[in-house]
Length: 329
Image (cartoon, rainbow, N blue to C red):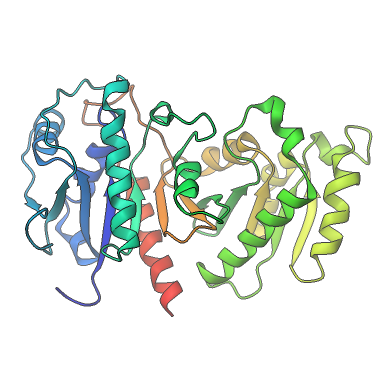
C-alpha cells in the first residue's frame, strides 16, 4: 500500500437512515480512492442489501476480518453476523447495539493506529442509553477520559463552535460560566492553530442574551461573566466580544474572524446551517481522535429513495485528510 494513502474509518450510523447511501455514493467515484483507503465497520450482507434496495447496484467489497486492507475498494470489517431487514426511515431500538458496536470497533482500531481518522455516519441519538450522552460528541468524549470535546461546524473559513451542546434550553443559563467558556475558547484557539494552521486565530464570542445583554438591560451574564472573562483571555488569546448573535451573522461580521464561539446549540447551528447546510462538516476538537461527520442527521424522510446527497460527507473526508496532514507537519 502506498505510504501517502491514509486509512480512514467509517462507523455505520443508523442502519435505516441515509448514512450508508451517501457513503456508497461517495465511493462510487474512482477518483476518491486516490485520496484515501476506506474501512467501514458494518456487515457485508447488510451493505449489499442496502445498495441493491437504494441504488440498484452491488458494491465491490473487500472483507478484512481475516485478510489485509486493499486499496481502490471499499474495505469492510464485519462487526456483526446476523442478517437484518432494513426498514428505511424508521428508528429501531433493537438495531442500536449494531450502531454502537460499529462505533466502538472503529475507535478501538484508531487507538491501535490501524486507521488515521474516523468519520461517523449519522446516528439516532436514542441509541445512547446513558441520558448524559446524547450524541457522537459526548459518546466519544466518554471513551477518551480527561478530555473535553468541542463541537465545531466547519465550511471553508467559517468555523462555529458551541460552548454547550445537546442540553435543554432551560438549562443553558445554568451551564454558562467563566470556567466553561474559558475552557472552550482555549480548545478552539488550540485547534485553529494545530488543526487548521492559523498562526494567530482571531476569535469572536457571541452574547447569551438578545443584543448581547444591551448593557445589562436584557440579562446580566454578559456584564458579570463574559466581558470580564474576555478581558482576562485577551492577555494570551486574540478574542473579542460579546457580539449580538443575530446581527453578527446577518451583517456578515463572521467573515472577519477565524473562529466563533456560540454559547448554545441553536444559536450557532441555525446560522451555520442556513449558510452552509449539506456542505458543512461537524468536526470534534479537544479529544485525541480525529473525527468528523456530515452536518445532517439520519434523513429518515428520504431514506431508501436514493436521493440523499453525499456533498457533506465528501467535505468531511477532505477536512479529515487536511487535519491529519496539518497535525503531522
